[in-house]
Length: 269
Image 1 (cartoon, one colour):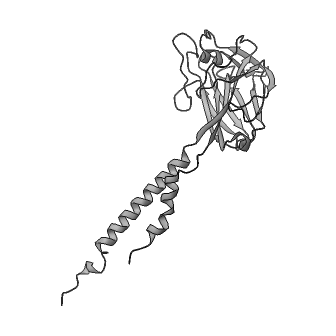
Image 2: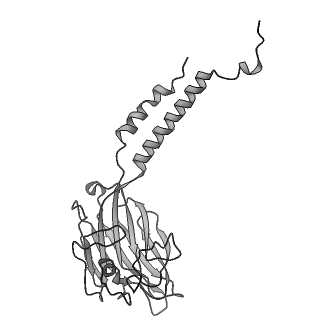
């Protein structure tokens, strides 16, 4: 009689090893397909608001395109205070936008010869009060009905550029929750000045002219722009974009493959 080797009792048969390997491969493929289908949220529509303040004369009109998320329906917010009810770009619903700021201005040297330059030219801004404390610029957004809009979540793009010496400011989003404050250092030169027309994300670069709050689901929020009193007088809000996203349904292939998992997990006897 053949003597049993030690590893005869430990090592599974070859066909069982092969089956396990194939099962793991299918599981990885199915999980990958499902993750891909559900993790890439698609842009559904947006609401884009251009803050003109009291100094910008011109305003965008369809079909002029502007913004990091390119849009052709920019709503003009005129003056240091006010309110509007813009419609989203797919005409599904309106939201309420109001703003209040102690100051406004335009980027020096911005010749507004393109739609992006025109959108960035004017801004509302914070200022310093008599005591040296910051009086913020505030934008409030409400009546965001995600089901009617067809959004699962939304991102908020805040454009902030005074064109003055690259001041560092703080941009806070409340109503997230919780409140989120991002430090923002402006890029110099200002947007639309000779030789410069680039949108730069201040959260991924040393400085920039916009920043993004991602993955929001609340029906209202506020943006508060405050300058650092020791560094600058103003923190600007040139414009905002509320970009609605929806997670697509898992593809038929992914769902079909996932349905095979219980069958594949049965061990061969």
